[in-house]
Length: 227
Image (tube, rainbow, N blue to C red):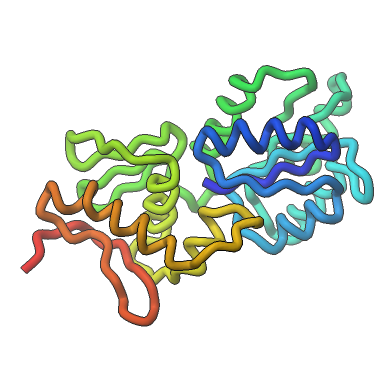
């Protein structure tokens, strides 16, 4: 899953980036509202953590701009301000949840997972591709009754392919969604993770789920026994 953190407190932003990265998120960070708006409009995020008191463009206005632009990525507002009127303003501008500083990191992650579980209207809470089940909020994957042991990055690649199942997805699209904005490595790293996924979700079950479309990318289909 890919997350955007818009927070002007650089120390807090870095702590969130490290913690969320360790929990399997690909994390982009912006330190002002205008940069945050640019990131949010130009990338596909699963959830946005948005501070209210931002330079350039405050969190209320940023959230309202996103909703006006038709961007319905779940937004969790984060602020040092307290009071029911501040919370009401945040929710009225289109935020999905609201947390007041100081906060519990564990509780924050639980709220983020809940937002991912609810997702956008068009996004299912649990994704099924044949007998392959991907639960983004619980970060759990199973084939039939067998729970599959995936790394955080493997899960993120599989989740994105599953959300686009039946479609051809390019390596660049996978890279942009699963790795953070600062990644400048070789796009072929995607091949490494696709190969690892095949060894875990297909080979032990005699299935062929992730198809290579030569010259284009990959397509996830209902698993079937190879001919």
